[in-house]
Length: 88
View 1: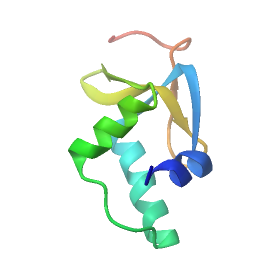
View 2: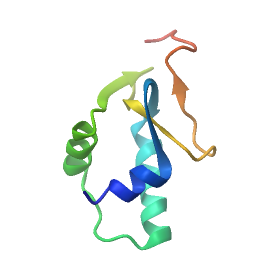
View 3: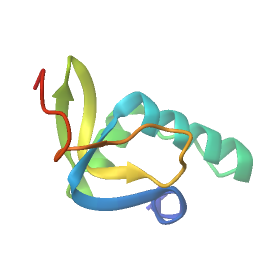
């Protein structure tokens, strides 16, 4: 899995979290540039691989994201489902 190292280094998988697709993708691209990691994963393969990890595509406030993953890097914002649920 070409995303395995990214997942291991930059992500935590928890049932009650949501991360915007753009933030997740930006973290991946930054990680890929930093480590010179192989080929770029296209959008279709990206979604397939995230789904294979058990993540669920979901929208919050009209923003696409994924349930079940959060970024380790504090620079990115993660939303906990137990928090503010207005606008869902």
